[in-house]
Length: 330
Ligand code: TRP
Ligand code: SF4
Image (cartoon, rainbow, N blue to C red; front, side, top):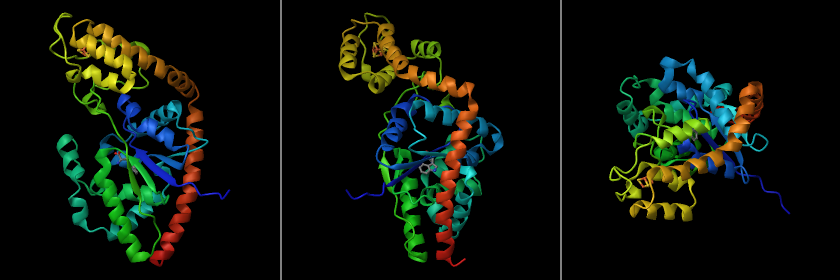
């Protein structure tokens, strides 16, 4: 049989805090699956975190550990994939610089997230040179591994389109160095947080993977439900219930349909309904907690895995940069 080179995948997450149920329902299962077919580079994108957290830069290091421990414990396999820290592979910065020379400013000024994030985070000054260049750095992350496939959520679609445009421009100017990266859109079900708004670290309403079983139990037990159900005898509408967004992600369809019926006919109480998703989550997360506990007691294991990943990533990035410098004529 002819051996085919595995295609290369790259994705990244900003180390801004521990992972929550939104990640468990969206990106993570996808990342785990991709490892079977592709050579995956998964990056902890410290410089991207810094672009919005520069006033609190010291927290990033601890968050690197948190993120790597979460990844490893949920099933990102360092024997298959390359887990690494963006800022430990300095070549990303060089490619970012080179790309910045060829990107017309209006391409960046029309990126919707540039304005959106400034509106969402009014207490941070994000009107900076570095933040404007966020998508340029993201493009460098992808191109430096010549990644063909980039799994991301809907919110990153514009960045990926821009990355493709930048790639075409680079190739036109300097020769065909980079494959045009394909976006692999990840379905991310909309999960509500404990207050009924979208689950998000910045709203303080998230349920974290590393939360202890008692914490998960407490957070969901006191979570908002469909406001129609003041008493157990009031029928409810599951699709208007924040808790039911968790059922959709974490409870098998048959069980979930039965609960929905019980809710609509006022046959079950909210606590009974909540208990089903609580138990399902506890079952799902028990092996994760075991592994994560081990990493917490042996933190060096996590750092060693990252060191190895950094080294592997660096080798690829250095090769690419040699090619890039030659193409430019340096
Ligand atoms: N901007 C991405 C996010 O916020 C993170 C990211 C950085 C990324 N570099 C990347 C994603 C490269 C995919 C590929 O989710
Ligand atoms: Fe929500 Fe379940 Fe209560 Fe219905 S029974 S309102 S779905 S928690």
